[in-house]
View 1 (cartoon, one colour):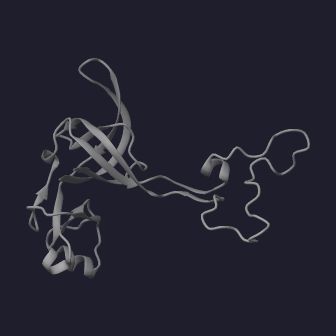
View 2 (cartoon, helix red, strand yellow):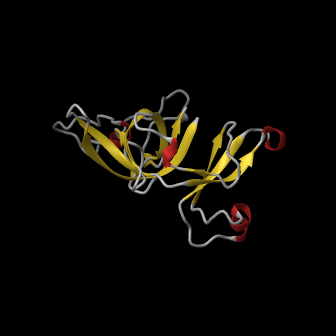
View 3 (cartoon, one colour):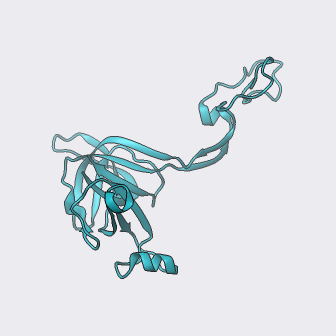
Length: 199
């Protein structure tokens, strides 16, 4: 398994060798440093923890955990048995053009939304005699149980979810600027930290 962390930049389009337009997302991929290695004997599972980005100030627990490896803004853990040791760097050369990857990130937060936007409800009819009912959810419970069942689709916070997108292709790699051009759309806004994994 190959993995790396990146920061979403923006979407654009490029042309492949046949002249077809390919929509891509540009992701800035800097070197990740292995901060901690977990083993099944000591921790109960195998994994490596990597650091990404830069943070100006660290508190004492963070300084003790990262030691002299760097001041990382993000720490992420990847489960599995790897040959990496603490202090090793994982760079852009780990991946090649054409690799098929899975991308995980946090989607855009859209705040408190109604059911029409959140769940694509049709709303009430906009006919004559309608009043204050155009975008309402309608009945939310039955007469018998006299309660609202858990999981009912209702207004609430929308977005800011962990989203997993499978089978995206690395169309182009700019090693000088450390940028991946990944086919299609990936979750999040500009600046979102993404986990890029090839199983």
